[in-house]
Length: 135
Image (cartoon, rainbow, N blue to C red; front, side, top):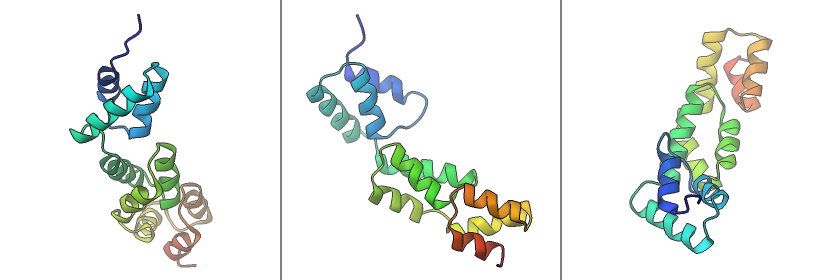
């Protein structure tokens, strides 16, 4: 018989890393947990602090920025994890400004078209790339 205790399923999903509310809900749906039980479990987990989209978004945004991603890529990633636009905007707003992160990457990688292309692929806006390369 499959495990259907929603709190137990959620706890296992949270064992190794923080997850967004939507990620936990999707896991509960896949486990066949009824909607009312999912809602109760998620509300309980939020109330006790195990599920916190703001904390998740801040940590995820910081990790992605640390791996050299720009704001647009971070915004997209957070949205893919179920983080709402307002929460994502706050998390991104708490980061070192994108233009500064772009300048740091240019200083490390060198001023070249290849670096510009890499920054664009990593989700940096055109203005940040141009400012970092002094174009």
